[in-house]
Length: 299
Ligand code: ATR
Image 1 (cartoon, rainbow, N blue to C red):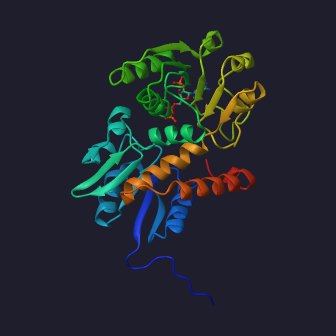
Image 2: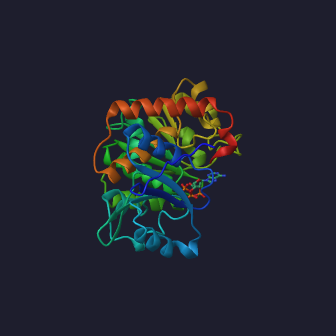
Image 3: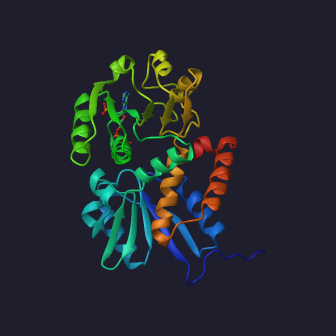
């Protein structure tokens, strides 16, 4: 019989709260970081039901859980239970990372940083470029605030429900002064000055792999970079269309990975070496691209 012990009496505990969480990739990323950095810590997913959210946070605090990620559907619902929030959290009105502090948890939004770090990794310039965001939900809001903070020249927002796009534009303009134009999804092929298109809807996500918010393939002839927040499938139909037209394409794995790195850095209070991050990024990317089993394994 083999005797194993991954956890000691002084192991620090971190986790994820959300529902559903069975298919999450976050433990893979965070426990890999624990291992490569030699940190005596463990990251555990916790399925939480909405009526128990407050009790879960109070319990986590009393159990000395040092940090939590927050995923669907609680990124907004946790806010009343926090003692403070970072700037992106306040702008976006949603947080995905909590850090234990004296008197409660402080909330952060690392989705915005994750997107920017992923674009930087792919050498995609934001400053002075025109960007089209497709979608106007929570992911679009994080993206719009992040891109505006990096001095994008102009942002277009196209959404099926135009009212939501207008509300998002107003929310961004409370913080940033760049021009923002809203248009119906059906009109994006009329735009002639878009450099980067960022797809933030769930259209095309497993198991609806045959869908894309862009019907007219000729749209992609007029842009240079296409970014999708989807990473399952690894290449969405939107990215396939873009690639066919010769665009540079980026999927959502980088954003997922870097939001986790940023959360980890907040928790440990220091930056992780760039070399270690780059090598983990490449290993995980290879594993996920090659491993056919993960398709059913997470969302
Ligand atoms: P999230 O927080 O993950 O962004 P959300 O707030 O539900 O999720 O937003 C989902 C986005 O996908 C919205 O922009 C939504 O468009 P609507 O505002 O019109 O609902 C978009 N979306 C979802 N299904 C869609 C579909 N079949 N066609 C076009 N857009 C769709």
